[in-house]
Amino acid sequence: MRTVMALMIAVAAVAWTSQSFAQPEVDVTLDASPTEARVGEMMRLEVRVRAKGGSIEQLQLDDLQKYPELEIVSHQTLRPMQFSFGFGSGVEVESSLAHVYVLRPTAAGEYAFSPAVAKVDGKTYRSQALTLVVRPGAGIGGAPGLATPTPDDQGETELSGARFDDRAFLRTVVEPTEAYVGQQINVTVYLYTRLRLGPQSVVPGKPSMDGFWVYDDPISSLQAQTATVRGARYQVYALHRTVAFPQRAGDLTIGAPNVTFDVGGMSFFDAPQRVEREGVPVNVAVKPLPTPVPTNAVVGKYDIEMWLDRATVTTGDAVTLRVDASGVGNVQDLRIDLPPMVGVRALQPAIRDQQRLTGGKLSGTRSWEWILIAEAPGEHVVPPVAIHYFDPEIEQYGSATAPSVSFTASGVSRPSQPAIEPVSQSEPEGATFGPFSLYSALRRGETPVRSRDWFGWVLAFPPLAFGLFVFAMSLARRRERQSSTTGAVQRKLIRSAQRALESDDPRAFYDRIVSSITHSLDARLGEPVGGLPHAELRSRLAGAGFDDDLVERIINELEGADFARFAASGVNTDEMERCLQRTAAIVERVQRAKGSA
Image (cartoon, rainbow, N blue to C red; front, side, top):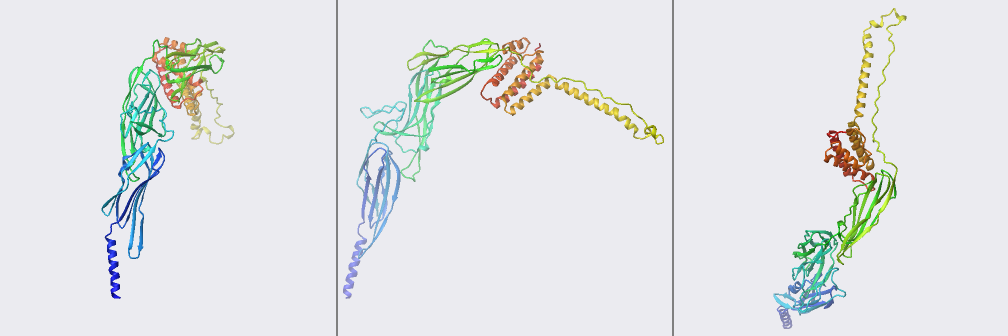
């Protein structure tokens, strides 16, 4: 019996010893599902090592870093472990390590992976090789407005406006590269990349555009398209889009753009890498417009309209003339000169622009509004207004004309009345007193009032009160005389204008401004000038010896006030404050001027 037990122990010991010194069972696999897909479709790549009886030290798949076209959407690491108990075999441990990647291919092609490498108990084990096939995506095209390069017979691509790089580069596309002065040029900067960039990290730098008038078309978000360059597929992002209008003839240069962005690592825990790229400058040949060039000719194609807000008006009142010019081109280049009209004074126009970018073409409308003041009765005709333009598509000049319009003024112009009438002076009425009664005959037995101590003070009080009354009346008359002077009237007018400014009443404000200036001129020249047309007032002031600078300031301020009173649009508060300061300075200069009637 003892012999049998010893034999069994020996057998178990041999089995245990053989188990301890046996080689671990290791299996390394590299699989993908599916192994063929289209661009943009998800692929699951799994590399795994299983080991029985050994310790897993490492598992690597180095080739994944070779293919930035395979964007890693997610990465997961798995470490399951199993234990089994068998009679005569002891405890058996089975462990595994797996890396699972979800990939999204961004470019077509074949991606060959070398075997994955695992290390268990200091020994190296390898998987089988694997090849992924990515087909072109359905309906893939170039980015809107992008001239997608086409490979030639050798698979090479000639790129203009770019310095090629096999990882990422910038390209500036200019259309056209030869244009006339004022003709629209489309400029777009693209980023070509094979790197897994983070769109939120992209910081583009605009190219310099000296000699151009620029209208930007902002890009709110980056949209990726694909293009083939030299046999490789690139993700293409439009970074900057603008339309430019050359302002002079000759060779102009669009500067080199630049961009910085982050490239993500192979896993969530990898630190991003900062990448910088700079493009190349692009030259544009700008030609002058063909001669002879019409007056104020612009580049584009336009229509024009003109109308009045009413057909009849009282002499001295105003009408609004509006002209709208609409079309394709840079409307800010448009200029219109309104010809002079007899009996009509035209104030400086208010100009408004509306621009829009549609279908890659900049178009818009420029509006002018003139305030026309009828200074004489009768029918007043606004002559036709024309715009001359050069159409670069057909390389010919054209014009658009708005027919004449007219309005009628009735009544006779009358000089304007002062805003504040002078204060009339009046003499105060004299005070009267009755006779004094010194004593009463009914009380002769008592001490006479005249003998009392306080009687002298009583007698002194009436003349003292009378003197004080006369002094107060003289002060009142002096204040009245002072308040009726030109300076006092000016101060009242300025205070009234200040109150109108604080209450946001532009019409009342500019009424006080006109009254303040005309009142100072009335006092200085000795005659009313409020009803004079500005041309006649200019001559009158020059003839009276006023210097040219003061005359120009007076006329400009009166015209500006007239415009603000008659214009339909609002008036800026800051401009009203500056106008008040200018008016105070003008009034002071008028009072000190050497001119005379």
